[in-house]
Amino acid sequence: MHYWVRAFASDFSGTPPQPRSGHTAVPIGKSKIVVFGGLLDKKFLSDITVYDIENKLWFQPECTGNGSDGQVGPSPRAFHVAVAIDCHMFIFGGRSGNRRLGDFWVLDTDIWQWSELTSFGDLPSSRDFSAASAIGNQKIVMYGGWDGKKWLSDVYILDTISLEWMELSVTGSLPPPRCGHTATMVEKRLLVFGGRGGGGPIMSDLWALKGLIEEENETPGWTQLKLPGQSPSPRCGHTVTSGGHYLLLFGGHGTGGWLSRYDIYYNDCIVLDRLSAQWKRLPIGNDPPAARAYHSLTHIGSRYLLFGGFDGKLTYGDIWWLVPEGDPIAKRSIESPPKNIPDNKGMAAESIQSSFKESRRENDTISELQRALGISDSLSSPLLQIIDESEDKEFIELGSRLIGERVPSNNQGLLNQTIELLRDHWRRSTPSSIPLKELGPLLRDYQRLISRHHLANSGSDFQSIDSWLSGKEAYKFYHLKNVSQLRMNDVPKLLAEYKKILPEQNASGPRAGFEEQVL
Image 1 (spheres, rainbow, N blue to C red):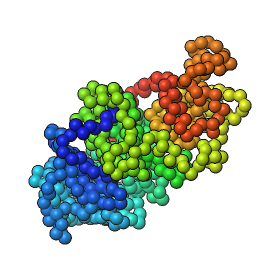
Image 2 (cartoon, rainbow, N blue to C red):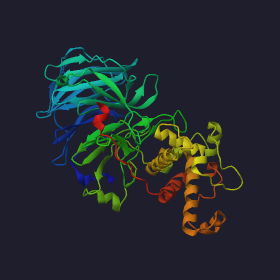
Image 3 (spheres, helix red, strand yellow):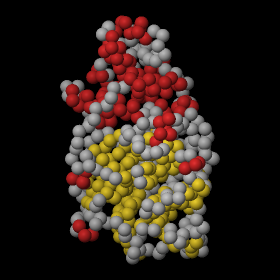
């Protein structure tokens, strides 16, 4: 079990960075984290703020340097790449206003000196929303991005000693071009997940690139990985952070949802377990921070440090720890659950309920949206009817999307797994993250579970539920005939009651090792 803990002012000394998104936060060894750049209220930033891990201190170093135009360091930018090699932080590209950048800088964090680098070889084009990772302690690999006209799928290797770029020639199947993805070196492979692809769709595919280590003499090639488990939904602007035998994915945004012109922002934690080679939901014991994308998440010992991000309206400057159950600060969240109300400069205070209502402002009621979107309602009869999961087509369709395949009605094992995955999805959801199309199936499953709970405990028939529920504060939504009877402020209460009556989830069995999957 892990817990999200809102950072107190007493956790640090010094001045933390101001709110931003599209920045980078790079760990330099185990001693410090360097935050650079980003975007706040249409203003691109170029400041450096450093977190000294040992002394728990935020500070702004006074940097020196000399660029080609006489500037001390890189120009303001966001959505760039930053990679650490030893004590050096390398910066490439990004965006400033409407311009894509292609300049190349290094910061020596021992003496806080910037140097603009003149590189050689196959120089990458200017781009933003690319992704990069270190290969050992000398090279950097960069993949994809957006050059202002097209999505990119090129792979570049930089030797940080010779400063020579080389475009990697890859044969065979190639991932679709993309930007806003993540690229993470794991052993000898580069793992690329998600991003926005050509034509605009947001993706949830996972690819592994081999042939990056010269000593292995492998022919460069991509392999698409289709791992079992609860894979992440399509997204971009997320983070993937390596910690032990886990890769932790957090946040990001996708499209679709209840109305396609709105983006959906996520605050879920999903791990890729390298030992069992499957996706898993990270068990979280309390409410997560507000959903966001283009944030940073860095690994410090057994903790993760979350900073900044954007949710379509607000730019965040809050700082959170994600800690295991035995961490000394975990008890803060157990004793006093945190509130997801941002209070930093540049952020408006909004509750989950008001955010939920705001995102649906153009429609007065859920029923109007149902009619507009053509959502069916199988509970429209005058008398409440409890239907089995296997007969609830919308419920099974939602679960099928999570499991990634159609679920036949005669495959009871797969049907049970689908039901389990969907219920665990709602167990991890927040009111503002649930699309409108999920409310009908959620309400029906809530009513289903209540009926079974009553019958299991009393042995009575369904007709006696009315008297059993009479006067109870809980289960107040049991008698609703359809989802259109829900009010906007009912949804958080419905979800809270649903989570209380959910049965315990079954544990998944072991799988083959991750390294075997990517070879």
